[in-house]
Length: 279
Length: 279
Image: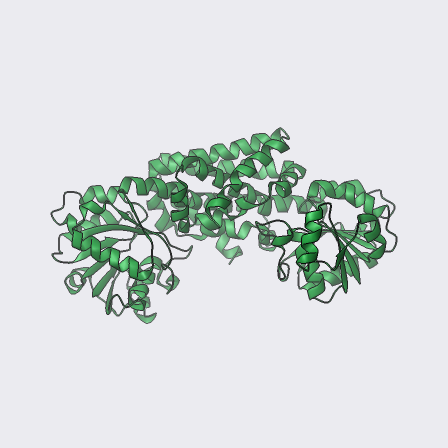
């Protein structure tokens, strides 16, 4: 099988490597608007060669959309306009708008909407790694809208990579991803801003980061170009969970203002329940 | 040198191991209110033997206070009442109240207030590890209040462990620690509560945790018994930084409500500055 990966950054680059590592594809073609990214991707061995989009589509059996989510719906339509037998997947973090836009496309069946639950705080082709996806969950959305052969091909690929598959509607996926993934990024961005605002002496941040700050703030290094479109596309779910998060912090603040040690302990004990779910 | 470690949990147990591993002490005596913790600490080889507090003090050259911070000021006074030549250190995350309480003690000079910037989200003797402290910063507070020989002994110990030493007043330490460490824990506790509140299906949390949630929520597993006293003792600094954090989240929310993609990007770009400080 030959694949074309459109957008050879952290996600696309790592997926390209995985397709080769797992023996799923004998050739991976890279497509990217940026000349620098194309050169880097070849130099780093992420892809075998690069082609313009129009030439890559007929040369590939599998087309992988791995660009920022605000560009995916339009790109999906353009790609579907040119495919016949090929299968197209995306790797974006939001799905509702995409699935709405392509709903009436005559070749909607060739598209399988997927969200592999992996990423790091880094971006660009240099951030691509070999072993990102294995063992992580992948969400397949609105599977009934895909042709059975397309769905089966994609399920086989993810199984070969070693990713457990969860099935959801695109609406459910956007809600759950806001609750679990998107809010973590906002928390982390806001924590970085808080500490940069309060702590004018950067040396102290560096020295004291061992006290838990480092892991909590890790996601604040993430790319604004990736994340602004995700928050915008998933605006209502993100706002919903963000309001709840501010509310929890306000409760915390009020308990502390009132010297309510017992109330604080009870709140933290409830938070400790996350232990049962995440080891 | 012989040490007595009072409170043989995550911090005390790990420090006891380090004192032996680094060849600093030939014997470490454990002191703990809990019979279970004492038995565990001996069973796991964290300490050589256990003794009641009153017997441990005369048997030791170095006395290490590693109990929750609300118990440290009183414990410090009780221990100082019984020492002569020994050196006493604490490992707590807050210092102002402690240093105020012992300020007038006739043997104040035997005490060195220290905060090793290391911890994990686990607690109890089972959580103790061999290689926690090396490479982490330790804050020494109000060093001028300690006898020169006591200060030198403690500096030598931390240097042997391989911990860079930073000197601060107890007031500065509490402010900076609130800004960098304490707020991270509140963020994480509140994030866990947010997700547990919104996401009623725990399976989804487990499945989707790969999307950044796992590292951001890690500290929410921390012990309420450890952290409630820290927040209470550092109340005004913690409230100050917590207000700023809520404010940053509210700005984020308003930008999203107004569809201000450019504003969101600029906010995240400012947060990215944390990159320069923490690799």
